[in-house]
Amino acid sequence: IGGTISGRVDNAGGKPLRNVCVEAFDLAKGYFGLAFTGKTGTYTVPGLNSGTYQVEFLPCSGTANRVSVISTAKVTAPKATTGVNAVLGRGGSLSGTLTAAPSGAIVQNACVEAISSNPANPGGVGYSGLNGQYTITGLAAGTYQVVVADPECLEAATGFAPQWYDNQPTQASASPVTLTVGATTPAINAALQSLGEITGTVSGPSGALSGVCVTAVPTSGYALTDGVLPVVAGISACG
Image 1 (cartoon, rainbow, N blue to C red):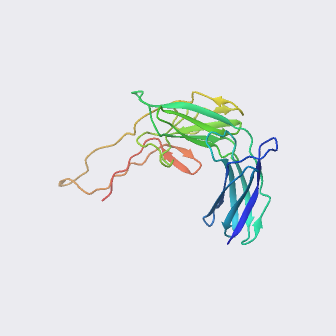
Image 2: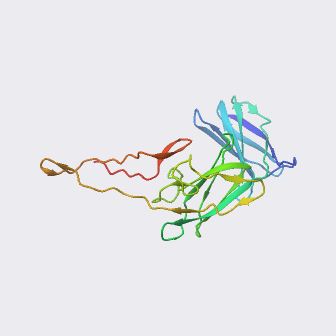
Image 3: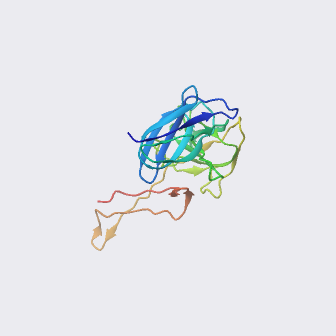
């Protein structure tokens, strides 16, 4: 049967919010649970194993511009953990258009991430549409750094070199973007360069060699929270 996590989600005025997704993760053990708030703002995540869960509250609809909230709850199955409540305030947003350089052609389905200067702020992610435009909603007021075409994004367009706004190679040199609640910061645009390649011939004393693995290792890159991504990198197939 498992344990449960339950509570209520309100707006800043104390009124219940419906259609809020509640996701519970036990990062250490890989357990996961999901629930949705109803018209009274209440929810219950069922069938949870014992553990400590990170509970994230976020709008199920991308059009609901509210700031996500992350909490923590401990579950001892089969008991119920109650009173895990949240208040989702109004958010800000940022938008822009992605094109390919130097042609100016629109770039579809490219990933754009807004990374907050506040470690407690989860930031947000958006993808460019058919017209190359994107909008990231549900962002708390504050300062952000924006990275475009991160290859670690799931289901994102490939073939473009990642870059930080405004056309910067590293997070340290990225131009900051300031957001306010209830407003959209526009024109956070990017012209993306295609990934480069390195070619050549590997030779030995008797001539060209086949089946040699060649790896290109970047000497510079830009740091994200989970590692270092090269600005441009390529790795050959190794036989």
